[in-house]
Length: 290
Image (cartoon, rainbow, N blue to C red):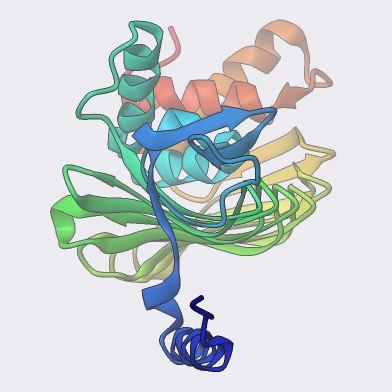
C-alpha cells in the first residue's frame, strides 16, 4: 500500500503560495470573454459555479457598464470639438444592434467574485483610448481618455464615486498637454469655479456653478486677457449679457441672438443655458440672426 507524503506535498503547496505572494501578477487567473458565462450580472468561467476572480480579456465595450462616464465624454467633446470618441461608442452601439462587434473596442477588466472590480483598459486595434476603475460593478475611481492618434496623449481625466463625477475634471490639448477646461463636481453636479483655456494656456472663460447650474457672473476673455463679454446668471438662466468690444466673433453673435430673442419675447424673458448653446452652435456654423 502506498501512502502520500503529506509533509512533502504540504511544503510544495506552501512554496507555491509563497511564490504567488511574491509574484502576484503571475498567479492572477486570466479568462477570455469567449469562454465566460454571464448570469444575473456576474461573470463565470464556463462550467464553474463561483464568480470569476482575475483578469477578463477581450470584452466588447458594450458588455461593460460605461453609461455613467457619459458626462465626461460629453464634456470632452464639447471642449475639444472632437467627435471621434463619441464615434467609437456609436459605431459599437450600431454593431451591437446588428449583431456584429468584430473589430470594435475591446476591454481587459479586473473582476472579483464575478463583479467588475479594479482597473479596466479599453482599446481599438490594440491602441488604448479609455482607462477606468470599477468597484463591485460600478465606475468608482479614476477615468482617463487617451488620444491614440497623438501617441496616447491624455485628453481628459476625472474621478467617479459610486458612478458619479466627484472632484476635479480636466480636459487637455492632445498636442500641447495644456489644460483646456477644469471644473469641480459633487455627486455628479458641477460645483464651484469653471475655467476654460486656449491651447497656449491663456484663460478664455470663467464662471461659477451651484448645484449644476450657472450662478452669478460669467466672463469671456480675448487676446491679452482683455474682457470681451460678461453675462449674469441666476439658477442657470441668463439674466443679462453685455459686450466690451465689437461683436465680430462667436460670443458677439450669441449676444445678437439674445438681443433678437428679447426684442420679440420681452426683456424679462428668461433664456436657458441650453438655448445659448444652440445659438453658439449656429454662430460657429456662420449663421447669424435675421
